[in-house]
Length: 273
Image 1 (spheres, one colour):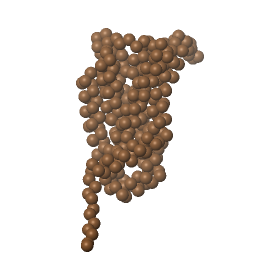
Image 2 (cartoon, rainbow, N blue to C red; image 1 turned 90 degrees about the vertical axis):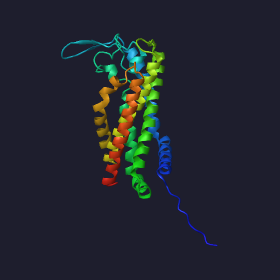
Image 3 (tube, rainbow, N blue to C red; image 1 turned 135 degrees about the vertical axis):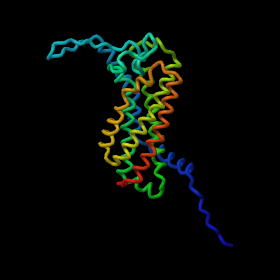
Image 4 (cartoon, rainbow, N blue to C red; image 1 turned 45 degrees about the vertical axis):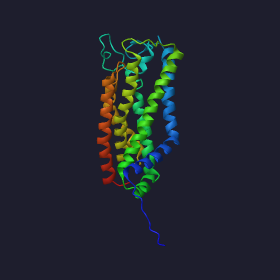
């Protein structure tokens, strides 16, 4: 009786499922993943407590003699997004004050560190070279890394939100909703989560271009991310609606597809070492 060998076709969905399984297993076993998520949770707690303790303190400029009085935030929501004004718009200053720089939007830059370390390790240890020898589809790699980074970034945003609520409760900050509702806050957080996909796509393409040079990927990712950082507070204010959510979702999808395709081209055209 003759036995015939059957080679099962390894389609895109099957390859993608296998790639995602490997990357998510590696991510959840990575110490860096738990460190960045823990930092996202603890940083707002420390910030709210320290800023509350420093309320009213004076600092003197030794050169000019100018006295600056430190003022603590009045509302816990200042750590989440830009407070709307009485006319329903964004707060004056376009998000250029200290609180707009040192709020939940910092998480977007923190996600760059995870992506850069996660991808550069693949090229440093030879995992990427062995992977592409067995799996020729480099687009699978890009999609998988983008998905893993997006999940990590989303968990960091959720962790920062929880940490802000804990820090606000400890510091006795106001939880009063003025000019926005719980629905607006939910839309704000979800919009930031989908907007994270834009930043993750940028970080992935920079990390793939830098390969094993971690320092270069981190510097390049932070530099590229800062170009869009100042727009985050305007795109995702505290009084966000479904329109903000849709715009962030559409933008994230466009960036993921467009920059993902460019990342695949870079992998195909460049050396893997």
